[in-house]
Amino acid sequence: MEILVSPDPEQTAARAAEAVLAGLDRSSRRPSVLGLATGSSPLGLYRELGRAVAAGRADFSTTHGVALDEYVGLPPGHPEGYRQVLLREVCDVVGLAPDRLEVPDGSSTDGAALEAAAAAYEQRIRDLGGVDVQVLGIGANGHLGFNEPGSALTSRTRVKRLSARTRRDNARFFRGLDDVPTHCLTQGLGTILGARRLVLVATGDAKADAVAAALEGPLTASVPASVLQWHADTVVCLDEAAAAGLRNRQYYDDSAEGLPTG
Picture 1 (spheres, rainbow, N blue to C red):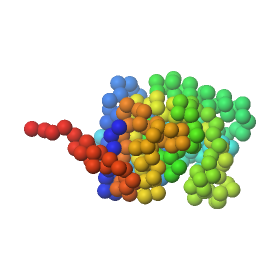
Picture 2: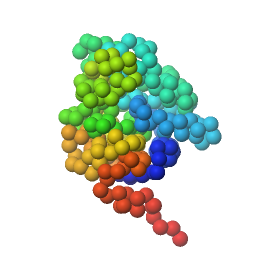
Picture 3: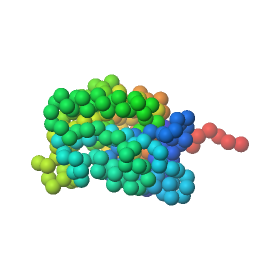
């Protein structure tokens, strides 16, 4: 696991974008597959990827985008449904084709239909050959995707109940708490671990406790993001505020300097 701490969110986003591009460049498969997270944490990263496209350093026109999750029960086209969010925040920014954006189908509220949608999504990821680079954020309670505390570490895409804290955190995107869905379809922790590279972005002091627990605490279902410790190629990009709780900070900074030259 590589932990990169930058002075501010802007530099954090720039380093995260470089980690994404490096992971995609290593892929021998074309078109590549980029896993996409929503929320405020990855927005700067997506803007940096858009700048890379504008500068001729990247091209996402043939890339497949794979969403981490989707709310259950929102009608198609709802502005806070994650398909619409990713169309605005990723496709329009980096030039990813809308017909290459994969999002779980959470439009039903029927249990059997949702189970079928989850299985179909797992199959679609397999059909694409797996995810090359998965972008991630982290919840204040340590959730990854919508895998809330208590999620099985080997779980696959499935229906999950959102915690009260997650719904409160997401209420700012809706008219109020009562409008936030109670359930979602989310890639499981096992599904996420199947990506070839994981790139997590976290900024701000509200994420500091979750970051410290995930990176330096025990591997536990109580902190779903602790599965990052289990992955062979994880890059964690933090600003100073999000890194404030790390005990081994000096070692991470020393390691980031790389091998000596000359």
